Image (cartoon, rainbow, N blue to C red; front, side):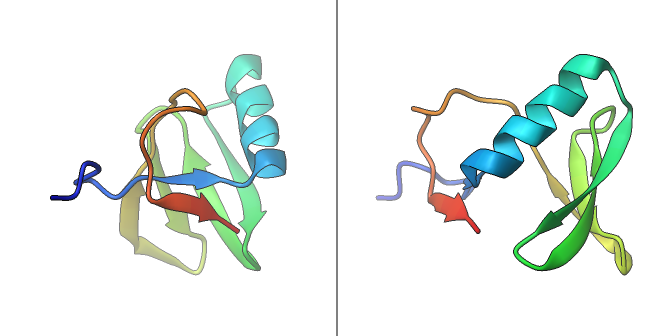
Length: 74
């Protein structure tokens, strides 16, 4: 049985630090290059999507580094 049914992936360490900084600054959204793709991160809606295709959205969440996950993206 999969103990991580939602399939959460961590951002790589550098991206995580940059996103956390943006979140703490109170910005509503930002753009980030992740794995060679430009994403929009919406902190108000807790979503991310490719800038080139905003129709496919994925939920994001803040969590501990030790939380269950599928792996690290990037």
